[in-house]
Length: 261
Image 1 (cartoon, rainbow, N blue to C red):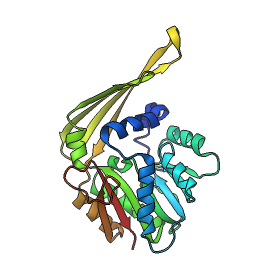
Image 2 (image 1 turned 30 degrees about the vertical axis):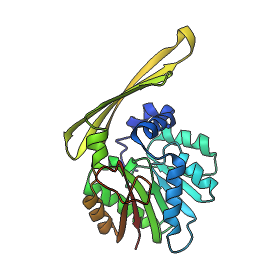
Image 3 (image 1 turned 90 degrees about the vertical axis):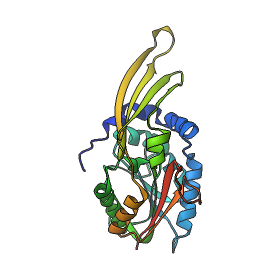
Image 4 (image 1 turned 135 degrees about the vertical axis):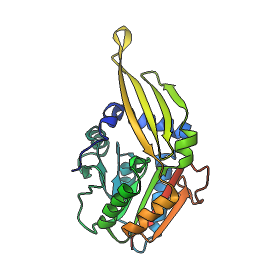
């Protein structure tokens, strides 16, 4: 397994990650999980042959895995954070395989799955073309011929305009956060996340303060297309936030569908 440089980011927020995701859906217009899963299934239906075996990368607390399993897919989850995987295990039970690994490490047999997904912008932590190409090559290796990889990344508009250059904050009662974005470089944005999480109830309650730094990279369309082609994906389509509409200049989530040769 590769050195897990990013795992400390999720130690603090794992406990309230699903509620933070609800806030992102409301304020950053991320698609709710059922809509993401519906889009995945639609893309996979276009594949030559049935889709049964699915791997979800950066699976987090397992919400997408849960819905895919209920729809009848044989699913496996992969994430770099043991805290997130522990919560996924609570949600999913003991029978769904969960793997702790950091991309591009993908410890699965060659040509062993029909489809791969990664929702929630996990690949936005990928630092540029060379690293993204390595991730794509790992996915290509485990996909069967004709397999489909669907993932999303934060668009340039999201990183540099909608989220960037702003301070975002919310008070949810038992936790509050401040999220400050700085754009020191057009290739990425640094997000400084400070969280206050209540411990205990009543007069004896205290708040634990934690801080994390997230670096979110801009992965423009030409860069993703070059990486996809280098990794063996001749067909690459990009959509607007889990819809069938093409991505455009003000798209917030570039949603990609790559088909293996």
